[in-house]
Image (cartoon, rainbow, N blue to C red; front, side, top):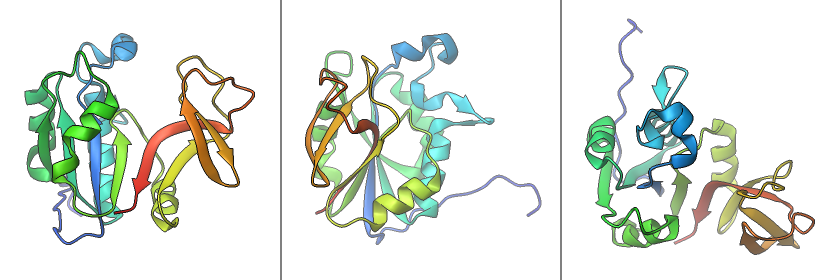
Length: 182
């Protein structure tokens, strides 16, 4: 009401935390990023990071652990007090798995892991939270591109996940939103 800015406050006893992997540069998005960190690319007048932080807060997920690296001060300023920050000083030489490992000491209990360049419908997050055990969101209509993180399933379980898997074996593409049980 009143056209004011939406404010998000984290409640410290939420059921799930979230790790947002935002250390990389996002060079594949250079044509639209103007050198900004990929999580600060705007969609609909707000950054991808803003969309994510709001979606997680609305779903009762938090606190957010934000792994930063490339232009870390800008990302830190954009998130403000809505996140706990973990710095990946080796962001140029490492990958998401390394950033995830750096955040391990900040996590207590079940956790959502999200790539920072992901824009998702809240229903996807709701379905992820409703699943039992560890859960992976994947797109069954995708997974044939060279850069797609392909997912292979057997009896509803992930048996393989890699970019170099034959597309004929893939059930789809990992969209970059996962939930791990404690």
